[in-house]
Amino acid sequence: MNTILTGDRPTGQLHLGHYVGSLKTRVTMQEEENNQLFVMVADMQALTDNAKNPEKVSANVLQVALDYLAVGLDPNKTTMFIQSQIPQLAELTMYYLNLVSVARVRRNPTVKTEIEQKNFGEGVPAGFFIYPVSQAADITAFKANLVPVGEDQKPMLEQTQEIVHSFNSTYNKEVLVQPKAVLPPKGMGRLPGIDGQGKMSKSLGNGIYLADSADILKKKVMSMYTDPNHIHVADPGQVEGNMVFTYLDVFGQDKAYIEELKAHYRRGGLGDVKIKRYLIDVLEAEFAPIRARREEFAKDPQAVMDILRQGSLEAEKVAAETLAEVKRAMGIQYF
Ligand code: TRP
Image (cartoon, rainbow, N blue to C red):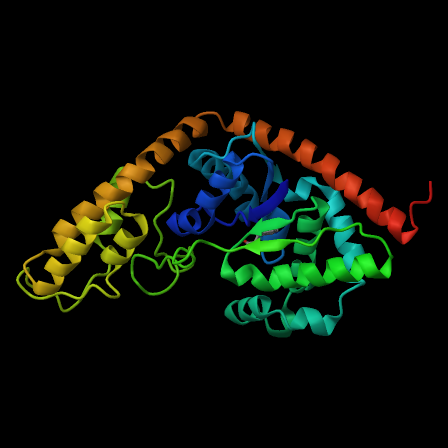
């Protein structure tokens, strides 16, 4: 039996990078027998660097939930919930913070990079600085043994593993479960943006979103970065670093045909518009049903929030049990 927990910060809609890197794996895991899956909208974590504009976070809770439902996460099989509605997570964080040194928190390479990117310096909010500890609370509250995440989250898992070890040995009881990261399938971890300038991301504005209409998807593919030296159809073109081929490798099913296209493109005589049209077909085949499901759920936001409310009630029960065990182990379950 596997208990799986993962989540996303609700700071924007989810895009194709999230889809290949993580959402698809979750749906597969959901369908396997003996898997108990928890998927969390991590609004508390999102607030650690958005305290001054909470509406950016709260407004995206529904958007992320719609993305979950659209890709096929099913509330009858998977518990979807909102982090801030589970107060036990904040409590656990307080106890875990006592097992972690400031020096150790400072070493986290992902947080380090984020602090630099956001130009926080010494002004970094304390909550942001320690969010890996809060993430350890998320994972351990559900006794998750598997945590599907991207490469950048490996340091969070290491921090969690250390906290689990420290807790169990300090309080002399095997209360917390050691989690393992489940990384994205090979080559699916870092989908570049349509501009080819780096990982698909909201801040770079280079994403294709699950919520994008067919029209927008088409426009985005048509504007994709290809080979700037491939000016005339007859010119030989470069496949490496050409986003159309990068995406075809990730999303295309007909690998043999894609290899033929590549050879033709390299030889010359194959235009960008042709390969872009083919990519649009490939993407539509996968994302049209997802978009349609998203639109259907979006008609009734109240029903979606009800799914999250039910999920949060279920999640709270599990977290409350773990918290009680934690407090007993620490000898602070007074009454
Ligand atoms: N840090 C994750 C992200 O930025 C979100 C997250 C919060 C998470 N808590 C988690 C992921 C626990 C896995 C497990 O997307």
